[in-house]
Length: 257
Length: 343
Image (cartoon, rainbow over all chains, first blue to last red):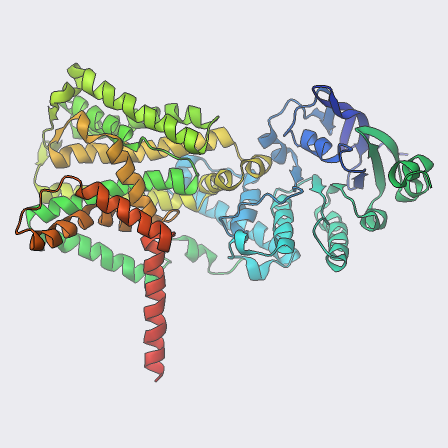
């Protein structure tokens, strides 16, 4: 079998806040194009792992490698150009600007102009704006955001804002898309839509998806592998089926019946 | 849907024809012909509209778009004014003086960006205000360069042996620079750096994880706003013919802030409305008061009272400023004009 080197390899990752071990010795790896779910009760360290991978927190210990490149020493703003994009649990958008402008900001990871040519709006800057707009429009049409293109984000309903955040992340052109609770705040129908969307994203944009998720239906339906955490440690890792039938997971999450 | 076919023309200035373009051309014509119809007094007042607008575009970029407070913009006008007059006195000519004004102010702007990397909001306001006091003090004490508290007489602008000392000459020069700065600001806001500024204003964490270099972007916002203020300062010194430290106090910084708040935060057009308000409203107030006080209009507290009062009214009833008021009135007029035609 041909070796398929992992996209993301996390080894012995730990983050301690004083005596609190938020994450303690977590290891896992994600393959290209894989949908990988991280589950666990509140406070298990799921979002903390996300925040370390996207370099918002610096780990106390351990390594995070993207295709062999160590991420934990890089500033967070350099991750998007390596192909790492993320969304946030509580939606972090640029609320005072339009949907289009939010997506264009994602596109500009691929920026080639300098400040001077932008100030003078040189032909190069014009060409670049047209290229960004093309890219943005592809994402707008993929996510059905057309009617909201010129609408200010602050005035959009919650579900649409979540989609806009996803659009901005896709505009970055990620190899690794980190979704922090893609279904939180959504109803059953919207959640079903999101699961179809995530499958569609993998298909169309050839990206691996790592998601933190509470909705077990969503996790079971679309993920290839699941990592179950408890109190900052790995409890189990495997296919959704294996995790569902794992006794340790059952007793930790549901209590001994 | 693909990118709209007209997007290229949407992006070029000349392509933005129609109503907005017409209004712009009309405004340009009015600005161009005003000196033929007005006294030197009004020409000089309208010169200050352009000068305040130049500094205002800078502050708008900084506060309205990048979300960084500055209560010390007067310091950048001061550095521009003094740098320009010093270089001119050394005999290098006005173009070099203006270049020095922009360069010195830009560097100071970069310096002030440093605290902004760690502070925001009120704390940043206090830091920038302190910077304003420091520059004011430097201007008062560094007599060999600035002339100290006694001030410095500024000679007329001279370009290649031609003196531009007449009020109408400074008027056209100021408006030319004002248009240039407006164009640069407009370009900034429709390209990556401008979008990055709005991104850090709205969510630093999302900006960072979308690839925005936050420190660099804040540095650019501060230095651009300082560069524009420095240019405004150089023009200001020539429009007045005299500079002294007491012109560049906190009160000037606050005037600029009031100007963009009343004009409309986050719009370039609002800066122009704000600048007109800043210069014209005290004149109007004086004229109105003159009718009641038989010409005795020397009321020293009038300006702050007028600006403070207007600011409160605007924030209460029209938080988006004069610009939004104008847009709304314009839309109303057009709607009614259309329904009139249909009748």
